[in-house]
Length: 235
Image (cartoon, rainbow, N blue to C red; front, top):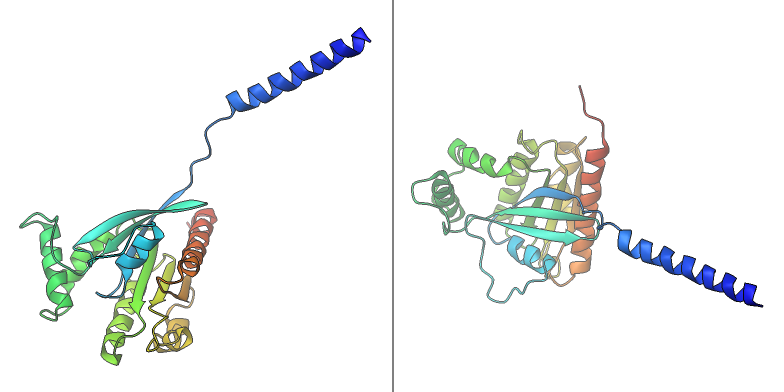
């Protein structure tokens, strides 16, 4: 009988030490990969509101991004460092510097005072550099003229030398509005099939009233980013 007791005690000790070692020797969780993503689109498309909601921030009293802003958007398997390029004023940019000139161009451009030119593209490319993916947000409810401007802007981004090889997430925002164009209509109008052939892109509808769908769209982008990392480099 005493042998059975001693054996039971020994087994309990072994189990206790095993559990203790597991708890004490367990290393820190594996860090989630981080990806740098640039978010672009015409003024009023809803970029700031979508990113704020993804970060569980309130959107009451939200104002358009001035210059640019960066948000770390967490997902279960990755963190997206999203650099949103705005079309507002110039807060935070030093007077006379490149950031100030960029903001001035963007502010004037968004108010129809200057044409898009090579000078503007030069400053935009500073914010494209180092990006691993692109989020392009458009307002599905805008006029035909503004939709054409969105189409032109997207075509320029898809062909830009610093962006053309990157995965694109294109969000047709404000889909909950009765005046919103359907996603298939936008896809056809933007001529994405012939233009983006051979590229990696996703076109999805979005609205701040359905953030689960928005998160799923971003998860699709993360999968494209992961695939790009696994691809062997070309010689």
